[in-house]
Length: 278
Image (cartoon, rainbow, N blue to C red; front, side, top):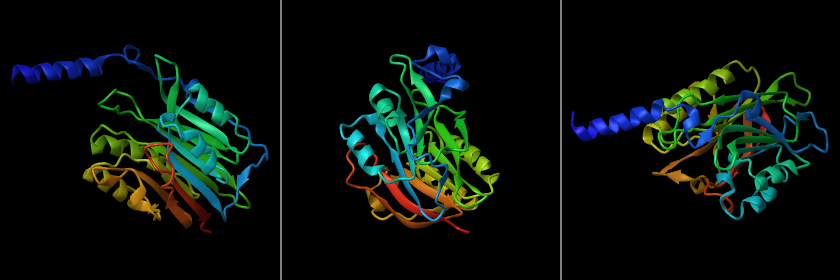
């Protein structure tokens, strides 16, 4: 083994062995992982199973100037708002907390030591969730060594005993397809135990052939449909492959599209109207 390879291995082993507190980020405690923002003025407690209007968007931590205008514009009539790369800085926290239409559940993947701002995934709804669960990835990014987050919420449905499960994922990026698979399969195991409809959406980071093939195959085997999107070619693509998806089980898409005129993120939002299959 050459000295250069030995040096690289030593650096990697040292980096991986460091405790979490030695890094530039912190993992929040269990009671600090979930933050609730916004207030539902209408006090709705359930969703209409015949029409569930959904927005899915990686918001890029509000890194582009148009994010706030786009968020206000594209969430106006949505029953569910499923965001990735949210950040609890003053501007985004204030924006989400000022909402009188949606209650937002923010699941923090980690927080920056330099600012104290948490980042993660956010699910908003016009109805308060009946339950909330999060899955922080066991694997870490090769670049930055941070985890990724999956948020699972459930919502009551008008006139039905079944509830809607919503899975919001920001998948690992700079890892092998096998480590991505572990994260996705963990969420699918939770979905398997749920008897009602499921909407599984977000940024799957399927930029390689193996990652894309795994996600599509795993979803199909778990009984999920890949929602067909109008203007699908306008999604965020990396190495010729799309990253963002809406998968459903027990739901039928009435319409779905990519909102290609959005400028507030490097990703384009996905939108769709769904009904529960009864």
